[in-house]
Image (cartoon, rainbow, N blue to C red; front, side, top):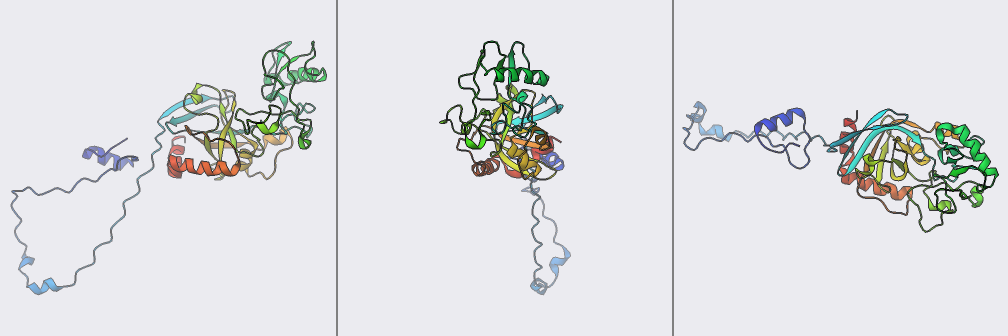
Length: 349
């Protein structure tokens, strides 16, 4: 950061269009005459008749406004984040924010229609996601999303055996609530008994919407359909630089100008970057309705999205789109407004 100082620094800063946050770049002072300087001789015009002095004064030239100083980004730290599907992305961060540019995937966790035991592929019109994104198999062998067909075969066996049968596969419900604490062994998943979503699994999020509700109550968790939230990747790069659940964020599609304020509402895989709730995805794409199947969900993704997380001041529940927007606008103002956001976006080009 440049501060007012030597002529060399001042001129260089002006020529480079330097941004200033806590000190103006002052112009060089006009040279002062030495105290013992010999005055210039009077010009010939000084001998003109005094009547000339009575001529009307010429109006002063209007003052020219100084060009506004360009905004500073001042997110001076950076790291490269390796993703599974989106290459390596540069992330910049500082004391009051973290920002990146990435493609955006849709995260359905917390939606009451996210997972259904009778629609494990998310293809029949019940669920909008596959259970491969909400469970792993722990035994008779370890199977994850990368072997989705095998995972679903084991899942169906466990389901048909009532989940806790002695010889049934062991399912790890990491994205679905269970009636007891998760861990080694067989667990009974929570099934929604709300008449509107009866029979669906209860889908969880890291941040809670209402901690007073029971673990098998879908209202305990953030609703991906109704709330704007994004997902923070696991790992020290993000948690170590101040990003936590509840933090406010601004998410923008530069191509369309569509944007939404959001909170960090869930924690995802370390190789992820750029995931938002169905609500966020609709805001970025302009979609008017919620998806009905996993295939439809893919059409809600967005490309080349900017995300700014306002770190260090997490928002507390209750969460509504209106409260998140109001808190987000205040956070953006504290950050330095749209000008500083744009300055940081330029550093990610």
